[in-house]
Image (cartoon, rainbow, N blue to C red; front, side):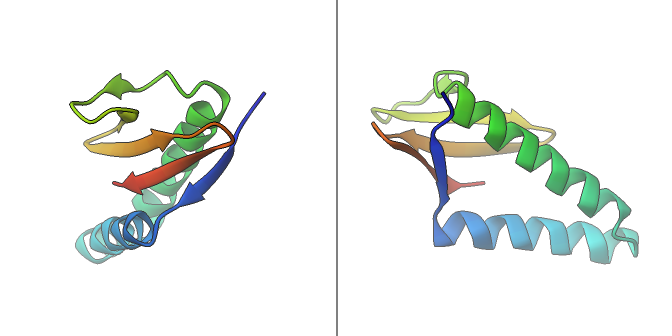
Length: 85
C-alpha cells in the first residue's frame, strides 16, 4: 500500500529552482516538464516501496536517483518525507 508523501519546504524550493534553471537555460519548458514528471514518477515509486532508495549514513534516510539529481527522503510509519532534492 502506498504511503502519503509530504514535501518539506526545502525540497519544494529545490525542485522549483531546478525546474526554473532548466527553463531559463533551454528557453523552453519542455525539459522542465519532463523532469517534473520524472520527479512525480520517482516519488510515486518511493511511496509504494519506501525501501527502493539507497541507504545513506543517516538512519532511515534514503536517496533515489532521478537523472542527475538525488531525492533524499525519510521513511516514517505512516508517510514519506521528501527532505531535499
